[in-house]
Length: 100
Image (tube, rainbow, N blue to C red):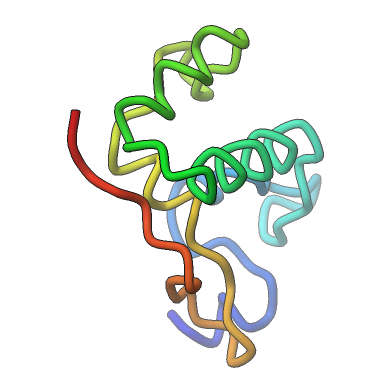
């Protein structure tokens, strides 16, 4: 599946948050609205907020998941991760604190 990721193709039913499936049904394209949420989430993480506090902050700003629900802690953690140089998703220097 890594070869599909390297070619910018989807590897599951839905693209990762921040990306949407292109018109061809194969390639992923950037979703600018979702990318903005990712940027906000990373800033909240850098400020030292816990995953639950980040969820609350995003909801207070009217920012919800694709399903229209509050983000789960695992979704928050996925958003604070970024793509490494080799194309793998790896954590940055910033680790989201888990907790209340």
